[in-house]
Length: 277
Image (cartoon, rainbow, N blue to C red; front, top):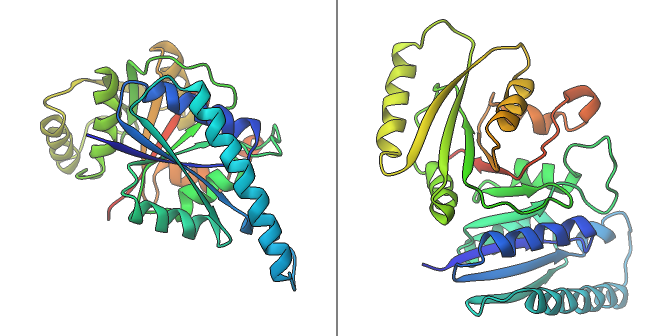
């Protein structure tokens, strides 16, 4: 089965770091990688742009994408990997959704920070906006200069308040790559689960019956991000997976991306799966 991967880029070191991670993650898979750059990011603040200037910026972006493609091809030893480039003058996030639909993209991979690399920002604005706006594909955010490890341990926090369906497909596909163990984390707010939560837990067991999974109950510190960080550290988690729905933990993160106010710093790749309903 071929995997189609979208790699939006602003040509920053962080974006290249995400490319390197992705090539290693899918090193044994048949893949097509699509490098996408939107010049709209640069020209949105300008007005009355001449067609000539837009054409010049598009030409420059195309040249940079071709250089990036060549760099990736030279760094990659897998003959089953193909690379394509896409330049757009439209809004980045609208373009992403269009490209995802047109090319049957399975996953989007981005760096956590863009060209500014401001230390107080948890996610760069493009990553935050992609998670907010792109509703038709999972997004994997890769920390800057992250050293690749085989993702043998995947953490999946849940409150058991939702019944998951197709959303679990992206989690399973990541687990399939390395026969990963799925660590399902529940942060105890209640002394016991409700009837609905028990049902959702049982359905999760059924959905993951062919996978190596385990359940872990964490005490409620009052701050979920601290409990999750401790869990990541204690179990040597390689990838954190969350489903983004209203009132979820990741939903609260992207509303407040400043680390001083939030205190959540992703130290490992972080897969965000959009909720279907």
